[in-house]
Image 1 (cartoon, one colour):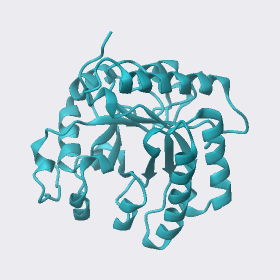
Image 2 (cartoon, rainbow, N blue to C red; image 1 turned 90 degrees about the vertical axis):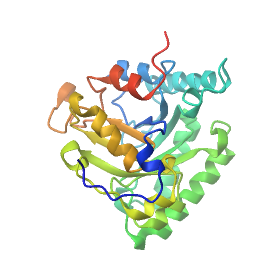
Image 3 (cartoon, rainbow, N blue to C red; image 1 turned 135 degrees about the vertical axis):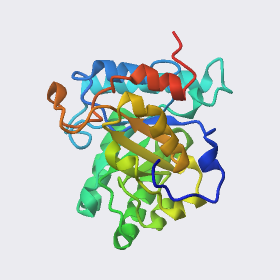
Image 4 (cartoon, one colour; image 1 turned 180 degrees about the vertical axis):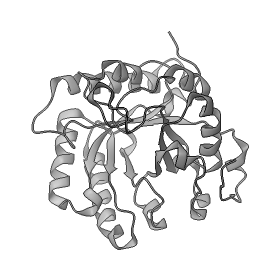
Length: 277
């Protein structure tokens, strides 16, 4: 049993919350066509997926990424305005987020905004994933300035319904003030061997599960149910679990999240309504 900090809020132990997927970034659509196709498949409980061309938007629009972005955007429109508008799983996500690398707070503000504008202009993204976001109190004002500007850019865009979504990719529990700087925080990113014994910061109990995401690699198929219990107990509403690990190097990829887990259909059926044909 994981050593978890118990929450005063019963939602963390009820296990009834609807989980969904956040995809930190698949490989280029040419290298991972099956992965990108699955994101647009009806019934997949997708909250959001990250588009990352070259640690950002690249130097010019990529036709393959444009096609993948268009398919996902169209799938979201069908989910939101289709025949089952009350289906909260279908209508809960499908946003495409642009990848902005904060380099732990070292990248210049103007450079990040230039990348953000390219993502919006070229790919009509619906938000941003701020990778390698700092977690300390000292850098919080700079992150707040950035997220405020990004929200303003998204509000001006005709592609970001609902004002867009910002996700801070800390990978650990940050200073609590970051919870007010964005829509969602990634408070765990790492191996299953650490996750199963992890502890959640007590301040997270003041927020609902949709404010937190967990990315875990090296999760064996036989431990999927346990991993989902940990996520629910710790109050995470968005997850990505995979049996890949950072030593696989499959298809030239060292990122364990760049490809589908071998049990993709099983985990979709566990947390979603099933795959509609």
